[in-house]
Image (cartoon, rainbow, N blue to C red; front, side, top):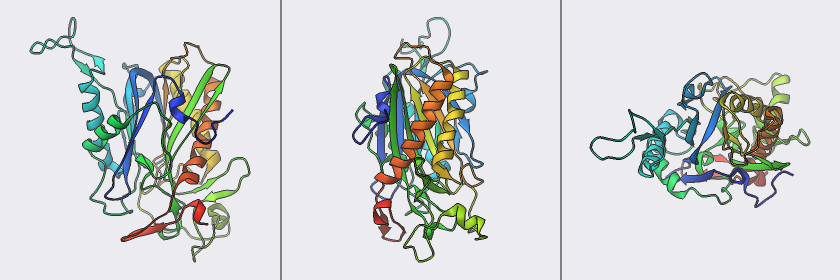
Length: 341
């Protein structure tokens, strides 16, 4: 069954640890998913305004099979700097792909040369607080230090700290997004998801089809219903390209190769389509990474894993906005949370 409150979410997948860094100076941050033993990885990019790192390496035709971490960050393209801190932490712990000739020993130090593989994706949160403050290498390093197999925190933490949803009619009518996680176990195989929800569109409860969080009416007192408003002829606000984005990691303890992991990432996007409307727009840079640790030793049915990944990702999106808390004051936009309406 799907995780309930207090369940482990993505860390239910053996071989993974999750760490958040939340910046105290303004609402922003980053989240790292560590795979110290390595994990086979795939990726699928659907939004039109992505900001990414090392995604081309995950193409099944390319050489490197396993990654050692995935970084999700706020700060728009600046937030990709946080990956350098993740690289540094992994390097200090001797984690990475062995490279070089022969036995891969550095001629000066006598140690094995290893290069950590750290794909990353970012979201746009620069309009919430001082845009000069964004995740950097120190933030990425701090997220690694904080990483554990404990239940990941949700809501206003990590990459989702400055996230907002329902921005199609302007940030002044938006609501607070956030970070969410969920997992499911079926017949001895576990699939989990972690997501930072920063969508242009509304968040939908897949079970009921109802809007849970999103664009508000002009007076801010109630949910508007973005798709209903669009079909009635309401005109969206002019928005900069890349001003939103939902980024996620889905993972399993099953054994997958890169092609299968890529297919799981593709199928997992259906979870975003069930829980966000509209999604994959010109101003979203939606990205889903898929990891397979192989810790269960089970060879998986890829269709099953992909279907479960979509299910847990939809659940994680809903959990993100339900766990979020209001952001306002000190020159910030007023972004109420679900609880406030």
